[in-house]
Amino acid sequence: MTKPDTVVEFDRALIERARRGDSRAFERLYREHVGRVHGLCLRMTRNPDLAADCVQDAFIKAWKALPRFEERASFSTWLHRIAVNTVLEKRRGPSKAEVIVEDPTEYEEPVLTFDTPVEEEELEAAIASLPQGARDALLLCGLYGYEHSEAAGMLGIAVGTCKAQLHRARGLLRERLERGVR
Amino acid sequence: MTTRQVKRLDELAQSVPPARDLWPAISAAIEAEKAANATVQGARRPAWRPAAALAAAVALVTVGVYIGRAMTPAGGPEIAANAQSGGDVVRTAFERDADYRKQRDVLMAEVQKRLQSMPTAERDKVSASLNTLRRSITEIEAALGRDPANALLQELLVSSCQEEMRALTAVREAGGQET
Image 1 (spheres, rainbow over the protein chains, first blue to last red):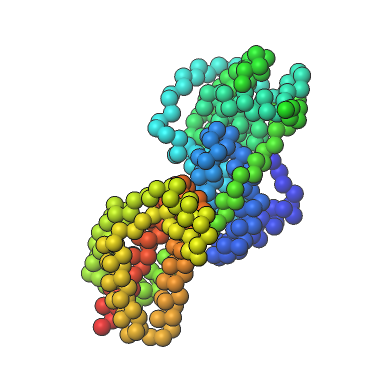
Image 2 (cartoon, helix red, strand yellow):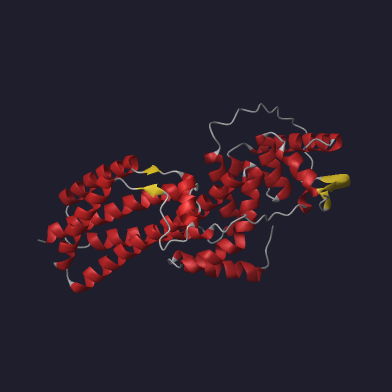
């Protein structure tokens, strides 16, 4: 998740210019970050049109909120937080409450490895088939590398719930990959 | 067709570029907001009193609600056909109500009179902001012509037209305070 200092400095310079109203600087930030933001939105929504709407909304919100961006924070994380919020807002209706029984035992590390190599396409399909809450936790912690506390904050859930959702996601994912479910 | 194989979840690409460039719509939204802010700030500078602010706010809400209700999405295929016809002007994805246009024309005429009575520097600034706002609306309309089903652009067009009416009302009211 850490970026080279020069990249961070470059981002900071662009952010400063964008804050002063320079939309070209903001466009540079958009070009640099849009892929990751879109990747996250697409996987969370499973709908290309909705994902594109979320990305547009997220960047417009980011532009408006730039004066409130704290320089100590990571711009990428801040942007992802806005994007996740936007996706959550756009999901139609309240999400069905998924009952998670929290297990007091330690959960395994977020990094998920497979015994045998898996086709990317098959893996994406298996992720897309996961229940919403489990999928969100898996994407943020397992793919985008966020800590449980960060992911829980973005999703508006307790850290324990996030861990439980990730645990559940891993189990379901392995099960579905073994069965070859698409 | 087979795709790349991975042994870890985090070997999947984090970055997935969108199928189309989303920047034009984002840029249009940003420019519209910048122009609206600049116009309202410019128009408010001279002797702005609470009564006038209240009058403007009431007019603004009325007009805003009116536009929001009066502007309805037009048929997609027709717009797409227009966009592909290669005409000089890409048609908007919205059809404006005749009453809205009439109301805007009346307001615009009043604003032009007010502008004449403003100091040159102030007038130039307000005119430039209004022109930028109008250009933003034209850009959004053009973008909608290319992508008629884009809900964000549709919302953006309505809100930008509302912003324009708000700005025009603010200029008119501000002028009223000076005379």
